[in-house]
Length: 196
Image (cartoon, rainbow, N blue to C red; front, side, top):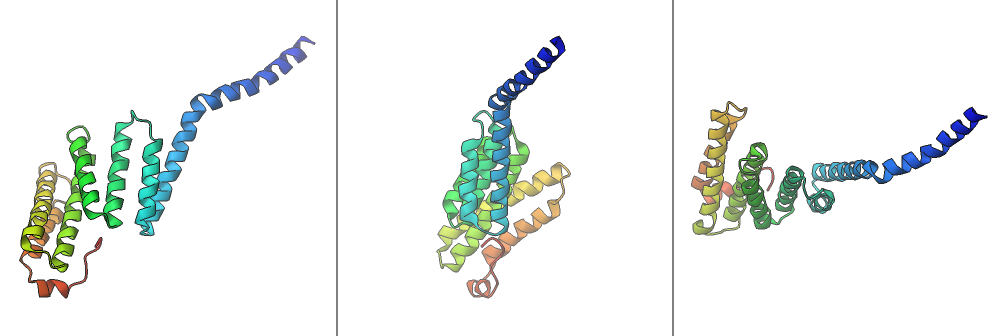
C-alpha cells in the first residue's frame, strides 16, 4: 500500500514540476524560440527582397530581446537599419547604421566592421543614385568620399589583421574613385549596381 501511495504522490507532483519549469525557465526558452522564429522570417523576407516586411520583423525582434543583451540588440539594430536603407529610407538607414557602428566600437569589433561595410556600400549606392538623379557635385561628392574612406579603413584593417577580402576591399576603393571620375552620360549607360 505504501508503494502505491508513493507512486500516486510522485505522479501528482509531476504536473506541478512541469508548471514550475514552464512558468520559470521555460519562459526564457519560449522567448528565445519566438525570437529565433522572427529572425528566420525576416531573413526569408530579405531573400525575397521584401525589405519593408523585414524591417517590421526586425523591429518586432528588437522588442522581444532582453534589454541587457546588448550584443543581440546591436546586431538586430544593424539588420533593421540595413533593411531600412534597402527599402528606400536611404539617409535614415545610413544614419542608424552609423549609430550602431559607433556603439559597437571596440567592444564588438566584428559587428563594427560589418556595420562599416554596410555603410560603405550604402554610401556608394547613394552616390550612384544621386549622380543619376542629377544632384550637384557638392551633394554627391561628400557621400562618395565617405564611402571611399570606409572602404579604405576596411581594407587597411583586413590587411593588418590578415583577414580575407583585403584585395576586394581595395577594389571597392578604386570603384568609388571610378564612380567619382566617370562622365554622367557614361554612368547612365551602365546598369545599376546590386543594391540600388
